[in-house]
Length: 62
Image 1 (spheres, rainbow, N blue to C red):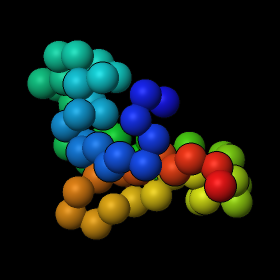
Image 2 (image 1 turned 180 degrees about the vertical axis):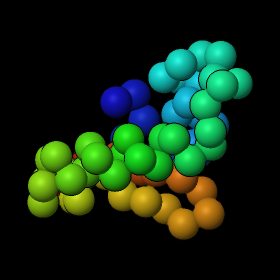
Image 3 (image 1 turned 30 degrees about the horizontal axis):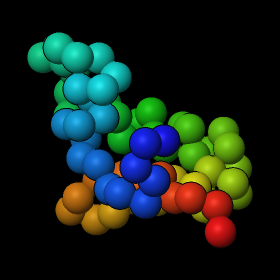
Image 4 (image 1 turned 120 degrees about the vertical axis):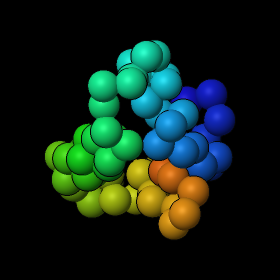
């Protein structure tokens, strides 16, 4: 993580993940984040926060 604790938008995540994402829906990233958080369990819930109306934030360990 280059910038922990900084929220990123879906668009930024899609750009970083795919580059040219014109064939992907905006909500695609939400499904990936949801499955990632579920797979990581309680740790995922603590490390990956959803910031309403902004995007997703990866939180540094305290």
